[in-house]
Length: 402
Image (cartoon, rainbow, N blue to C red; front, side, top):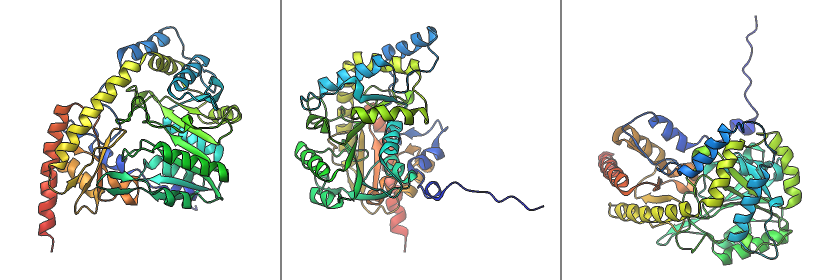
């Protein structure tokens, strides 16, 4: 009898790079002795009033399907929240522009499915969370990366380099600001220039705004394309409840897009997840209508943690950790580091410390390490001690090599 041949998925899936963040985390998960900072996740649980809204919804029996685009109450609440945050008479944000999604990454994936055709040219600003770079590849798009540059002031964008990459045949620009992993944040002038260029060439712009409220140099939030948009712009924003409201495990997000886009998006949601769970959406309503104090607390706590951690890292020999202007990560360079994955694997196995390798975020991230600082200071101090021991072992091993 002839043996059946195992058939793999299509090449676009086989050729996806696996997440090096998960590769490190999977090696340390389940170990009680590991201090983990590999994921972008706070160490505080979701506030009680948000959890209560979900549990009360469950007790009411709200366990059935909802509208593909989300509960009308949540869509309206998100629209009101964004309209207050980004008032713009030329492009006011209304409920008809909102779709509720099953997590922020689901929002990014859905948006890409609605925009990208096989063979389309997609440009990403990197270093970048690997999910954003790989999502268009699932759709058989060609992805071009434009790298930020690291210097004394941290990570900076060469705007001319990006504009040169945004050729007329480009279908989509994906940009994350504040950025994971670097914390780099677009300025208003950069946004104006990029948006004008995209308008000129008909390029779609997908903004990952997951960290817009975690901007440490701004009054309320990071500069947004919504502040300067026109109603007919090819602008789509993906966002999440995960970071600002401490809801990573809830898997709830949203998309903002022109009304005709949202009307068609409902079909794509149906064929992906159908809808977000009602009780999770009830938690989202509680968060976005009553969570201003949560965001204020989170920002100040993360700011203190950022300053504390970066000061401790910069005190170590050969470590360069400029405080990031946004997000929740220190993305720091280690002199002499050429294999960040192996380095982070050894930190887990030998020193009980879980960090993310810079190589996970693109070739330009090699030699760097990402550390999520959404943690209390005492825990950070314990982790820095372990990192210092791991760094010393790395230096010692380097000197022994012929």
